[in-house]
Picture 1 (tube, rainbow, N blue to C red):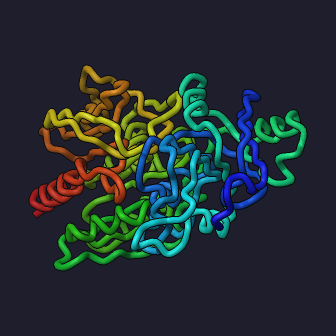
Picture 2 (picture 1 turned 60 degrees about the horizontal axis):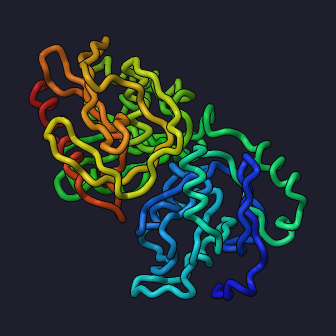
Amino acid sequence: MNTPLATRAPAVLVLEDGRTFTGRAYGHRGETVGEAVFCTAMTGYQETLTDPSYHRQVVVMTSPHVGNTGWNDEDDESSRIWVSGYVVRDPAIRPSNWRSQRTLEDELDSQGVVGICDIDTRALTRHLRERGAMRVGIFSGEAARMPSAHLVERVTSAPLMKGAALAQEVSTDETYVVPAVGEKRFTVAAVDLGIKAMTPQLMSEHGIEVHVVPADASFSDITSIEGLDGVFFSNGPGDPATADHEVGVLREVLAAGIPFFGICFGNQLLGRALGFGTYKLKYGHRGINQPVMDRTTGKVEVTAHNHGFAVDAPLDKDTDTEFGTARVSHVCLNDDVVEGLELRSDAGELTAFSVQYHPEAAAGPHDAAYLFDRFVTLLENNQKVGA
């Protein structure tokens, strides 16, 4: 679909506060609504689009040129595109990459993802930074000709992200196993809250046999896995305040002393399990260029993010919990948002940890890949204790 901009059908983007941007249709023609968020990544759009954490969100790309590398069948992070809509400024006329098998727009169209192009994404991003993430609608073709008041009404009638329970909408229906690469060293249950394919892949490369279980799995479901060494909670969409079942299961995991590692949504749920609150960020962190300090080493990492909620935990002191001592292990250098937690026993041994960002980011930086090594060390130490 290499239609010149001038001959494309009209499209309009309408925010819930009434601000409107007119442009041209991109991807599938029709209408869509969701939460408007902006992503600062300059590469990796295929991984972004197929990340289940973006479920029910309309992604605005701050990088002006999108689609240059096309689309292939190897880089998907899940079985489908999850974004509700896609906003770009200047779409590539044709892809130029030896791995490309079709255009980005063809893939958007075939999966029914409504988008818009040829708009001022800088102005839109500045508006979202000033006003905060909000609901938005994209309307193209005949839908773009409806009265503006009617379009705003369609947008404001869409559900809010705050209070949305979405993990089970993106989770696997049945347990599946990703075998260890080479010698099997450990067995881990990975609770799928919107897991990306690269996560169990990286764990398998560390000798871990990964049993990916549904979001509604019970503690008994998890502990029935033969030879269980640890538990992992994945990234995922929605408001962590709604995940009472998952938090309850995690509290049982911690009480049993089973080693735990969490990413993104898993970090927020660890926070809740330890007694901390969560809150919605004004516009969130999304992109592959976010600076985070690992307070255990003092090193600053360039990291990949996609989160609109955060943990409300003190940065300046440890917190005593019923499971041990909790502390903030990672912090964002842009705004001091909590980006990681760790839990230690009364003897000072690490028993659980989590990060708010994505150390598995296939198209992003690899500064945080060491976290999988840290998980392996945690599993090793726990095996020694139990020996």
